[in-house]
Amino acid sequence: MQHTLLITGSPYQSKACHTALRFVKTALTLQPDSIKGVFFYEDAVLIGNQLNQPPRDEINLTKAWQSVAQEYNIPLYLCIAAAVRRGVVSEDESRRYELTHHSLAEHFQLEGLGTLVDLMNTTNKIIQFR
Amino acid sequence: MKKTLIHLSSSPYSNLSCKEGLDLALVLATFEQEVDIFLSGAALSLLNTAQTPTAEQGKNLHKLLAGLEFYDIENLYVHASNLEAAKQANGDNLWQGTKPLNQTEWHALFSNYQQVFRF
Image 1 (cartoon, rainbow over the protein chains, first blue to last red):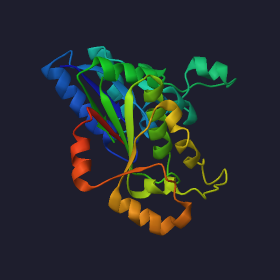
Image 2 (cartoon, chains in turn brown, blue):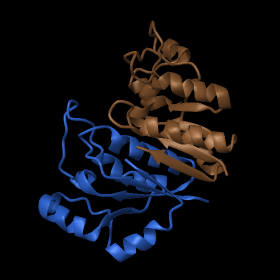
Image 3 (cartoon, rainbow over the protein chains, first blue to last red):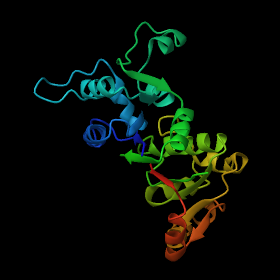
Image 4 (cartoon, one colour):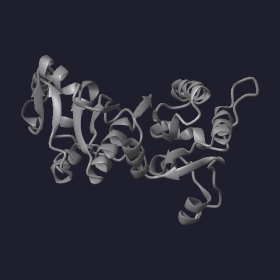
């Protein structure tokens, strides 16, 4: 059975990104192909900002997600509209908006909500973390 | 086809949740997915027809409601008791396009959805 995760809770105001990370790690350990993709929406897109610098004695949640994505080869999607509004901008979007910087962390990609609809229709279950 | 319910319970003016929930509903409908909306709590203030927010206060999301039918979103549900309270609070300024449900109807309906998202 394949799952999609929809994460909407802010990494700073909620434990949604933390709890989802624990879920993903457990699910992938038990069944390596159990997660088809992870879609971050609302304030959860802040996880994809490469400029995040948490204090050294705290978890670096962005890096933790990156290493899971790399190890298990699962895609991490950020809603493009939600991300750009919050300053999480890829190189392409940076050029489009004529900005001088970009901030999207490696292993995250900007996608429209249509990608979420596609995931909904091609996985058995979608689980929201908010 | 999977049926989706978007449950809005956040105030349209306290954060972006309500807007981003409605955005998801519109995208689902654009992709010809069956989607209904349920309003509760602070999201019921979407139904006030007399709101005129400034740019600092936020977008007037109420205006989106009238356009939902063009996306084939035909069911915007509320609890009957909440609707009564909203009628008292808003008087003549209450939008009339919602469908009230009692507790039993709500429970029966809820189990029809394969996906429920909260905003």
